[in-house]
Length: 342
Image (cartoon, rainbow, N blue to C red; front, top):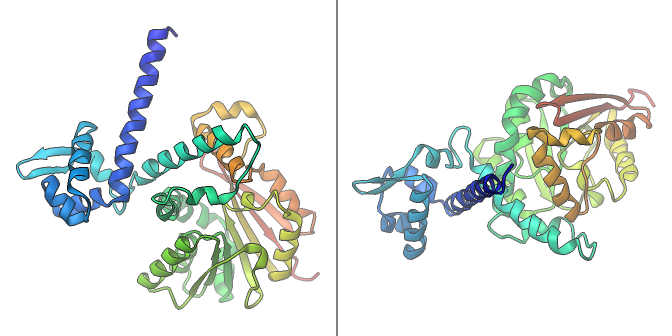
């Protein structure tokens, strides 16, 4: 490839990054959502309706028009198809791509500096960008809820069995509670208890369970997994893309704790990115983003796991285990069942 071709390639990539920067501003400040509600508006009207500064909104509208998110209209601006796709509540919203782009840039800057010292400051780095954290749970929900509801959930019989028992599901690292809400909507007798370390996630989880009419079956608490005391023995413990967050600290103690909480015959269901055994697979488009995310996980004191690593943790304790791969083998769900009699 010639230098001219490489220059063109990288300039196009830079343009794409700029486009997502503009989209991010519109998402987190409600500009796309407000304009969708209004239909069309001048920049001044958009600023007033979204409670934003008029001068900033004017400059944003110019940039959003330049990158194709807005179209000119007799009354000012209206959303283009790509602008409508960025509305957070639209079907199959592309909002997560904009949120992830800014989070990735933040983590890249942190990794660049920390690589010199070897420091790994932990998950607090996610909260260092105040406009990102409130969108983190919504980003994960938009990215993964469809895969869960339509592909993963129907292939995991444990959920239906817990529902038949009117059982309790504990979600460790529950985010904004979308996983437990999905289960509660599918299974009317199932109850849920969610734990997360970020108060903003728990606030959203409680708010969404209330508005969904599920607050009588779902509870959410902010706290540390290592200090959690459950109110009763549970039928299923879930960790969704969260085990790697605690794996480097003391996975053996965590697994032992899970076993102590489970009723006989109870389940642990672990959903994790499936880190490949063969490095060459990282060249595939489906895994490129995972390779960068694993670098950002290192900043947070974590690393992605091979599915077999997880399976062996549970099988060594006499639990019956299975591994299922989804989404072009990039997502792994490990189900481990405690023996009915110890």
